[in-house]
Image (tube, rainbow, N blue to C red; front, side, top):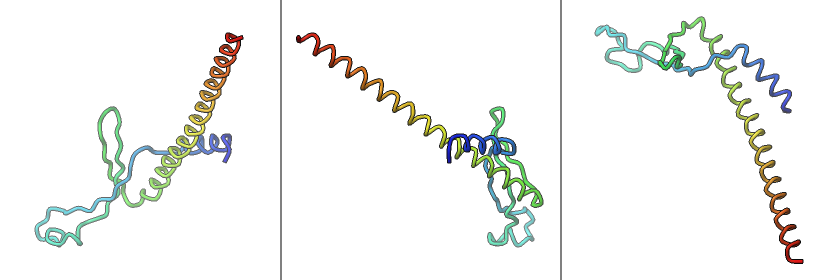
Length: 120
């Protein structure tokens, strides 16, 4: 995929993405008569949580089951945004390194030319 296509996809992802991580948690309810109190296989859940940091504080937000599919799509946009950003940054790094190498080769050629001139 070319740079223009990646940038277009990056823009699309940015419109809907939600940053953070998703985790599913099973819980023991606290009722000593509930089966979850003595059988870990019968714990409640899994419950979906969105975890993120904002203004230096960690947040964990419960996501009701009817919102889970939409959140998963929005989070997938974030994951894709990161993948595209990494791909673009890698290509930028490679171009930069090639530029450094060309400059290094030119400087080496100039030094060799100057040495050859001085030995004449």
